[in-house]
Length: 538
Image (tube, rainbow, N blue to C red; front, side, top):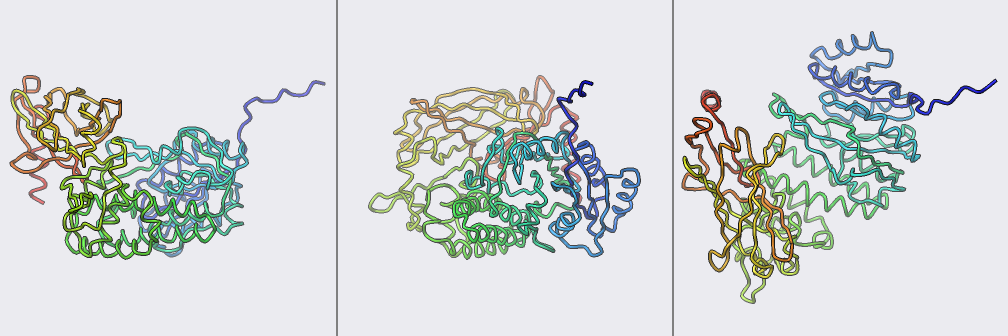
């Protein structure tokens, strides 16, 4: 007798538990559960943990479970107020060798579990991690999360081999060995603890697991900003959100340092300055005076705990420079300038002050914040600032650009050119690409004028992208500071041979960059007008 031939592609063994958590999210939890079940035979069980919902979510889940033996519903008797407790309930209930997490308003893309499970088993890794994408709804625009970590398959004997892992604080784009979590006592903070995944991820990294990274899309984080209730992490309007984030970042640092993971702990502190502080600083102009004072005081108190070495490493990186300004001033100050510095890429607007001895400093009244290290930076790494004015006109709209000198570094690099393009917000397609020379317009700036074809852009929201080019081949990608005043940031109706009429509104984004909204044709104009009236009548 001849042996049966082996299947070269055997069906995956059911090895994964997907823990789906939800609270009062009946509208979306079914889609999340179905996306987990649709992963196929590798999923042994889907554990839907209902955090004591009152909207009928538990009845919906129970109905789904009646027709699906892999689905188990666990209803908590008391609402926890957060995400950590229901995930811990799911860990306790899991019987499969591997576990992963899914929030009720998100989905797993097809093949996610197979990709993570194959990577974990092939590499004998306790943790496998893949690419998460943020999907803005209803537009559907997708933005990869921490994409540089997931450009290729990679196996790490320990996380300290790649300290940038601390930037990926999500727990949901990862597959974990269940016994690894249990053996090391790795759990989420209980109760209403915002940013619980920061702490959980730090505990995972502190245990030094073998890790596999894959470039596959394994999680779709669905962001519904128009929803009546934002997710806990996206609702940044109150100071409690910032104090909770600082608490989570501080605890993550302490966990890593306490486990002897000094490289990861240092990277976590750098991430706090260069990501968390910058993100909230960009939004300070949107907040009221009490919030700004509370944010400044709380941030200043926490930064004072950093040792000097932790603050001075790469001292003129934007986040660290911003932190030095906060530490040097007891009161909020220079918020528009800090907003631009917190942008990505960073823009350092004038004034470019010097001490009587000629040393570059933040400002004449804050000379203790020295900018001397800027003088040794290559021009491609400088926070160069470009001002932009858009003048919509009936015949020929024009964009005026002005590049500021930065302590002689631009002149030293040589006369620049600039590539100009408008990128659509929804799909990032580029239009209106052109290259122009920047010519001297005084002792401290270079200028250019660029025609803008508003009709050719068409309806939508457009971001201005610039690439500064220097004679030696150096490139510096940046955005432009939106100049306000004299009606520059005002909606205008412009006659158009193509559309009849269009509305053009230049505006400043949260980070101060120039962007543009365009509505074309009579229908587009009426839609804008009706929206404006609705807002006025509220």
